[in-house]
Image (tube, rainbow, N blue to C red):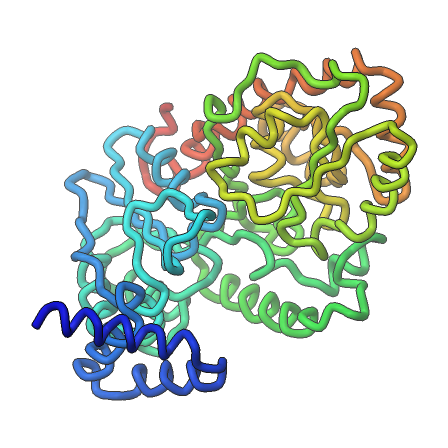
Length: 413
């Protein structure tokens, strides 16, 4: 019987995966709109483990119980949870909706299959009851915690949780609040100036809607990068977190005759990949650099990629820095990117330190790289400041201090 049932499940999953996109959407719609018990049983039959509910969320025993969900972009929900636990009396759990297992998976305390998160009414009801037992909730990216419960809005969920005595704050990661029209007007190389980027109108509407929701909510707001303070000026910067030891190396950069230049175009339009690659191709053709564009590499393999680089190029359109740049700095590489003075000034004002990222724009990149090759010792001095900067600002301690006021505990880390 079990063998026959397993074969049936495998056959159903295979059939679903071979369907055209329109057919899969129709099956998903049917599973979501059938009575809950029937729809969820059908989902498990068709999708297998991708629709199987995880066990119940475990609420920690502590005076301050923090729940962070549901995005975990670049593993930051998990890292912020660990940072918060540096504070006295705080226990934290992060949750993320995840796709079927893949190489890009980031650590998470409570992983929930995407289909369950978005469609399982019974899971959402059980999850809501558990979340109400936390003392504090940090909602990521203005995304709902329980998408099919109520009106599907993170802001109405926040009001409901507050009515149950839960303290709620929002943390913004980027495009959910970055206003394209503002950025395009202020930044010459803004990706939002591209006529061919069809997502810009939708991103504009999303950012306006979320900005209005944040302002109307009166909730505390955090942002993961300082540039977002231009869009949410009353927010508090919550630095991204990396593990310095994971990226550390004793190998100094720029020791080989032809340096390795690495770029990870995780979002090419945002990072400006198409704008900088002609410059890099020319430098490589002249035998001055070896260029490596890194595509589809699992996150667990990135430390070795960065350790094997001399120069890491981050992004040249947004004007900020995030997790990838911090990882490269932690590895002691020469990091080259466009970081606006607003970002550098805010970091300087909060931490007293300078961001050790070599400034370059699309227009100046060639000259900057040539300058680094001419003054290798000076470039190594900048790179050597990277690990210390990351330890001081991005190892979790500064993030814990940023969260302390919201959590109502002393900023002792």
